[in-house]
Image 1 (cartoon, rainbow, N blue to C red):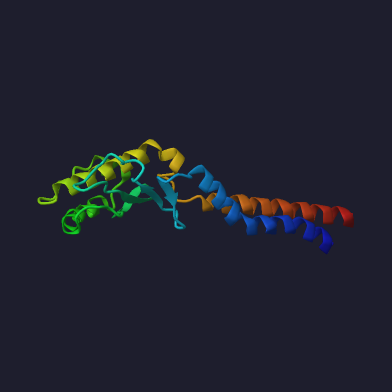
Image 2: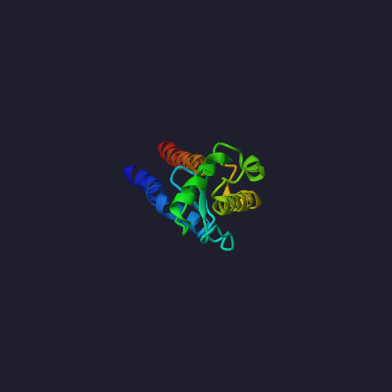
Length: 177
C-alpha cells in the first residue's frame, strides 16, 4: 500500500522540486534577448539599449529600463550613459512622468523637455516611447496585461495531485472489494 503511494507521489514531488528550474529556463528561452526580462515578482522589464541604438542624447545613447506590472508602468530607470552628469541629472526628473500610468496611456503621454538639458530630455523621452511601443506591439507574447504565470501553474499542479490521489484511492478500493 505505501509502495503504491510512493510510486504515485514521487513523480509529482520531483516535478514540484524541478519546476522552478525548468520553468525559469523555459521562460528564459521564450524571452531570451537583451530587450526583455521578468523579475521574480512578475514585473516585465524592458531595456531600450537594443531598441534605441540610434537615439542619441548630447554625448551618446541614453538607454532606460521600463518596469511594467499588471499593465501599468511601475517606474523608468536610467541606465549607464555618457551624458554630462549635471545635465543628465536635470533631465532625469522626467523619468517619473510615466509612473503609475497604463502602458497605452504612457505611450501617448506628451512629456516636456527640461530646459538646459534638451538633448538628454529628448533622448529619454524617445527611449521611453520606443520601449512602451515595443511593449504594446508585443503585449500578448510578453504578458504585459497578465499579472502572473504562477496561479495557472498552481492550478495545474493541484489538478495533477488530485488525479494521482484519485487513482491511488480507486486502486485501493478495488483491492478491498
